[in-house]
Length: 541
Image (cartoon, rainbow, N blue to C red; front, side, top):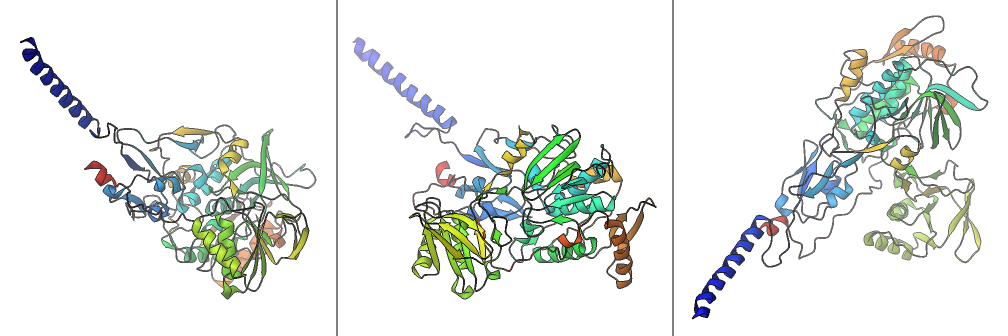
């Protein structure tokens, strides 16, 4: 009798417990079949950091993302397969992914004041993309803002000219990098009568923008910020932008030292000592106008500084009928060797890699290299090392211990680069974590807070205000104009004012290189979507 009464009660309790657990599982997103919580990753996009580079859109295998008004946007979230490739390829951490109901992961940024000066090393400025403020207009504004701020914070024009050590160049401002921020900063120094030098590790000016594909748009973003730097920024193709900047370079005659890699920066007694692989400089202020590409790694062998040895390949079409050595074992090296060995170029290409096999090369690149080797377009030397670069030859140590000298018209050392964060930390730039939504203020306001309202430099062909200082007079302002008469007057003034601290022979013919349409794009390939890949829409159902 007891069993008859207790049995149904127990059954009811068990059923009630099952229903309760199911209800709790539904609330938490628990699958009754698996018992595991289904967590969805969602996108978080910081528009201040997004440059519209299209990398996230290109890599997404299910076309979840689109560029709208040159910003990345999630338009088909239900098609997302949670692969996170978009976050992995974002160069500025503008796009991150995080679980629903949680905060986006913080980002690491340099610890700078509102004028992009290091909080730990006074007088050391970090501007542009490496400072977490990308986009060309921002860089142009910040280059000028940093110089104006330095003038109001301890910079004394000409203070280091007397007593400079032998073999050391002393200037008011040392500028590292010849991109838009560096060029704008140099022009601001010229306008204010400050001595300066621009140190560029590459073999031509504004190399990052010059390497954009032909016809790529350089957008004048952010659109709610005015261009108040000394380089014009407007919606244009990369080719039109570079043509205008070259016109300006020809007029202002900037002191730019190409192919000088900055190795160390020390601050002592209110003076910076900047050492490159070729020279030493002293300055009262240092402006780091660098990107996020990092410092190219070096082999550390004799002759690596020779002009025909390059750390990057810009445009394979520039090399025809040449004997070319490529050094490296990654995708960049393999892609370069394959591109240079195109039959239409008639090059003789040698690929040297110290390893016995390729471990870091995409399958498609390896297939293309194998085909090039089989067709005798590329001579592959595995297990080989460069011993020395000579003027027209390279000495290699082969895998069997023999040394062989091969003729070399051009050499490309493509062995990667060291991220700039490590180097920046080593010279005193501290990094801190901030929320992903962290933004800095409009860059035009920084300039105008210091020198008042400025005209919007948002179209090509505008006159360039150059402030020239003389020992006899305080200053004279001339407007650089395209007319022959004004140009002749301007050149006469420029020669008189700048001859004291410039070496014209080092800067003769400085231009921004414009590569042809075909060149190497190191963007990740589209991921292969497996047949069983679950989209968010399926997971929700």
